Amino acid sequence: MDAGFFIDLLFPAACAACGARIARGALCGECRMAIVPHRTAFCGTCAAALPGMRSACHPRAPYVLGAAGNYRNPVLRTLIHALKFGRVKAAAGTLGDVIAHYAARLPIDLKGFSVIPVPIAKERRRERGFNQAELIAARVAEFFGLPIERDVLVRTAHRGPQSDIEDPAERRLNVRNCYAVLPRPGERTARAPGKVVLIDDVTTSGATFTESATALRAAGTRKILALAAAKSV
Ligand SMILES: [Zn+2]
Ligand SMILES: [Zn+2]
Image 1 (cartoon, helix red, strand yellow):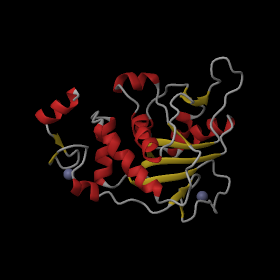
Image 2 (image 1 turned 90 degrees about the horizontal axis):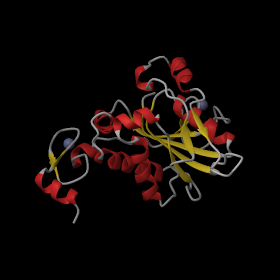
Image 3 (image 1 turned 120 degrees about the vertical axis):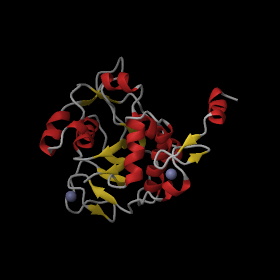
């Protein structure tokens, strides 16, 4: 038995959304039910709903967007905040489950895909102690039985957080050329998996996913499903 077991006994968890006592996880059953999942994927360029997986509006979109729910959903928003700013790590598993159950219903076969979390700046990682996207990605990878690649995509520049910027054009500039796939030690060219499930907690303007997808495509990735727990557009 690990120490966590005894800590759970001594301090039963509280639902991150309503405060009710729960045995495990981050949400009570009622709050979990209040997260209404989307039923379609979305265009990676304009975020229009895609009943199929192909973008008719922007066939050359760099990725297909999968957002499990909407950021306006109070439970989903609270859960994302609890993980990112309240350091409630149990929220990552729940967010991963929300994404996985949503993605499992999309008309896409994820066989052969690798899961890659959107990296955060080293400075931010030091502050927070973890990359929230990586924790969520671990749960999604586990659910689908896919490999997770933590070191393929890296964040090369540290600028201010996206959440501090409202203007979409400024958000794009803030992350431009911030992500890269670097050659592995002893190799000359950077190589990324052919099919990638890219994971982030939330997507707003799509700038982070677009820049990450651009870096992956430059390193050989052909197919990208970018998954977030919530979209705010
Ligand atoms: Zn609750
Ligand atoms: Zn579109």
